[in-house]
Length: 379
Ligand SMILES: Cc1cc2nc3c(=O)[nH]c(=O)nc-3n(C[C@H](O)[C@H](O)[C@H](O)COP(=O)(O)OP(=O)(O)OC[C@H]3O[C@@H](n4cnc5c(N)ncnc54)[C@H](O)[C@@H]3O)c2cc1C
Image (cartoon, rainbow, N blue to C red; front, side, top):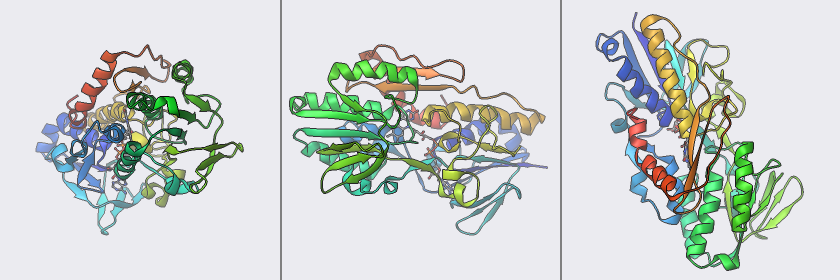
């Protein structure tokens, strides 16, 4: 019996899984022993990490997008027909158009989305760079900015755990370059009692912020934004005035996850090593949509995808499990417009950011350019 692999979600992790399986299962696909199908929501694939550079005019919008079918191996049929109900008991997915796709192995790769509407006043009063429209507006606001109070407000959960640090360092450097830092104050807020969820990263960040005179407010869980008064307040009853508010909005998972009762908030309960949905033996979960308490990042998605490729290929051909995910994550961190550092860690090794350098910034830029090779599974 031919095995059907169904992938829901054509972003970074779903695409890496599809392309990697094609590489490993080429013979089986040729012999009609394995088929791979993908369901997606749009015909374009967005290179999300590039959004960090858009507000500073450091990337063109056209560099952010590719035709999803061109990024995907041509042996994988791609249907722009979003999943509406995922039935893990019946091994099938019903789409928005009413079609039903059955599977032997399912890969849920539906990612995460920003929810500024969940905080009163945030949509009206804040800027963000986590989607195209937001990054465009932030670019305009930055161009018009002539000095004043900037609040960088971080809400959880969110993807790319280092992006809030990066935007803060980049704002400082960009405004210094425009001669505006002597009349600008930057305050960074974070919901827990330190500057980053990962303690070593928090410890590294504090002296870096102190060096640049960046202020911070910890234990700041956003309650509301008042766009008229230009203030942001926390549950802890701290109110900060702002001239420019840059927020990392809270995120949730995809609607279909909640609609299918697969996880509160759209986060699917997932085995941290197996990457199997809890309670399923043929449903893998990859990327932002897992509930595993590690960074929601492209590199996490990539390393998880590699593990899932090995396991599905091994299960299809030999009926056996190949290997577990070790929690590996690797992220470059921009520490200004021309310096950077990096962190890597896994379930047993904590992160250890080193001193920033120009070379590491260039490595990040080179790595950015290789995103499309990553998505194709060539890196
Ligand atoms: C500003 C910014 C900077 C970032 N910087 C970095 C960085 O430097 N390094 C790093 O490692 N990561 C970075 N990331 C994070 C990284 O982009 C994400 O973690 C990564 O894309 C997650 O991959 P994913 O496949 O889980 O989700 P996505 O790539 O978001 O893909 C999810 C896909 O599922 C589709 N989908 C949703 N619902 C359905 C449905 N019902 N049916 C079918 N399809 C559906 C969506 O349309 C989407 O195509 C950054 C993100 C942002 C926004």
